Length: 404
Image 1 (cartoon, rainbow, N blue to C red):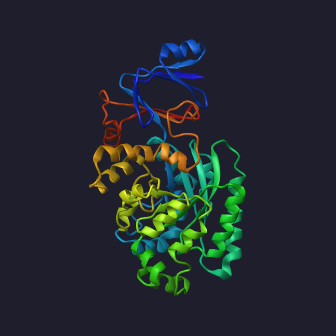
Image 2: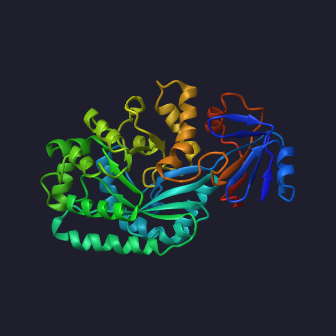
């Protein structure tokens, strides 16, 4: 049992002052220090310097640890040339990124205040690093493969990786399922994986409508993807259309990553399926796929959250940096409302999408918290200042335990 008394608390939708938080694994009470000491006289007291701010830990819902060795190996600027460079350098990058490399990536996230992350795992090579991370982890075992004659072998490999992740029993580690994309996974495999996810109540993620090339391929079997699939897979047509892909998920709420080029009909399908969009602004810019229309998502009542993607399409795994990029990418959006919404997108909204009991400084929530050192009294623009200034983090708590 501990009591922490910062100068300010960001819940993150309200800024409060002159209050403390009593917690063990969860937040037990929020009240004045005097009242908390009366209720919990034996609690350990954590004193805080002036101008400290307590806020929820950040949640990075989508990251690829297995490509964390990349810095300058891959080609940026356009999606398909980047994809070709991934194919060309994949083996070298994966061999270069051992468990030590991936643990460095998890430490990078922790240093920037990320107390939970969603690891999208293509090969299972990141299982040891993810299982040993201090953060909570949603471990998305990714299914990929478009050739029907390989379906059994691909699914058995996926099941083997899923079983390995399900053998991890530590608190805060959640095995999950990822479907790579509508252009790269055969519908037979998708249906089998979705049935498994439903039967075992596993969280689910997928990439959807990231690039114009994906749009052209799924709609017309044309565009830059045509040469790619004919060259690498001897495939002359898409496995399914975008709307058919979404129909497969209509009974299973899913985190759909990117969704830059979804059309109005597909947005309606996202609403009806109760899906959440993961927005990765830096990755979108580096791969030249365009800018998602957040207004369209909001008008359609589609929830969206913010994530970094992996170091194969980013230079950092820092969510404050990601939110800063979003502030400038969406230049027509009113600044302060967007800043507030971005903070929510990596705390309360992300926790809801990942079915976690965290993301807020509120009674009953897990005590996943950051203590930041501000340089002045905060104002109603605190969300904007948090994104722009990158204030030092004095302490990080996960399930009430100080981890940094």
